Length: 433
Image 1 (cartoon, rainbow, N blue to C red):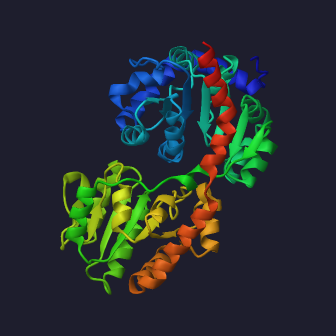
Image 2 (image 1 turned 180 degrees about the horizontal axis):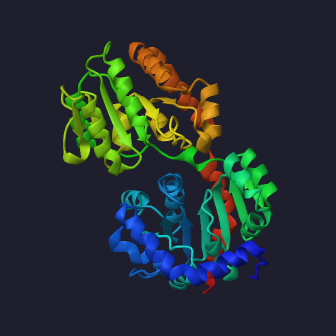
Image 3 (image 1 turned 90 degrees about the horizontal axis):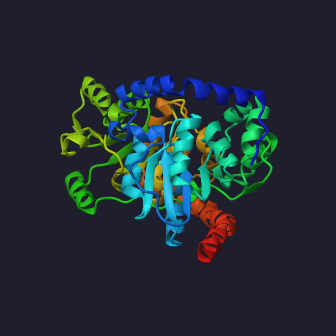
């Protein structure tokens, strides 16, 4: 497929060809020092792998990080149930760890190559995907354009364009129009996303709903769950999940205020990036609080105030322990984190004002009194104090959230229905060969 490129994309491709070796080496060295790369798998960033390509049609799904990975795991499971081989790519160490825990047998994870033509070509030469599914909004120009040149069908699933991203893309309409024009189909999360994609130049669009609303409750180690429940006993528990810098200090301050009336309160803090756990421990100790650290094997004994859950893949455990959850990324200017898993496990959710990554979900929950929006640390303290003192109020919020999420679900089936013609075609071609 020959793609007519605007000048900006032609320049990008030329520069990425010329500068790839030097820039890649420096970028990866910088990321390695900060723990953002897996040194044992660095070759994957250059499009090199020691894994063989599976036989038969290969479906490739790409998502940037943990959130995208979680959203499409049920979709991957359904595709695997059709006996298709599945390749999953992402760009973060945390998403790779999640893939190891959650991907079904027969699905392979690789780090996405850096967006240079030679690395992308090396990746595609080896894997030769028959269908490429890009999740949400991680659109790398060389990756997309090279797939188009090789006539690999591409579909955007769970497509999302925030207002902020929309305004940025509108400054370069030729660039985004050329990239979106390479896709066979764009499946969007909402009517608002459909409208934005249309304005940005996507030729074929359908609103299938948000896959994150169909994510099942996350698993938990049942032995550890029983052990922790036994240790915690009847203590009141609140959790701050997927927190970002600045939010932990606020939670620690809130804990200090709340324990005036709830002296046995246990607060669980699960940072979005577990490597930040040591800083949270220092902050809690500086506030005069007793701390236990999950990664050190500590337990939340009776004298512990703050339990730092600095491990991956254990939110299912935390949500089963805490009936009240503050969703992180929402007081910090990050855009919020997905509340669905906490809601599915019966937690009442409170969040800050910065939730543009999930604005439709939170707006619907707030309107149905299925979540509580707060604007600052003081309001968070008041909300948590109310729910601790009045369990019936907290339960009413949790129940309303479950009903709301149930009404919003169905994106998985609609997405599969949209993909069915492509998957059937691959099955027919395989049988014919």
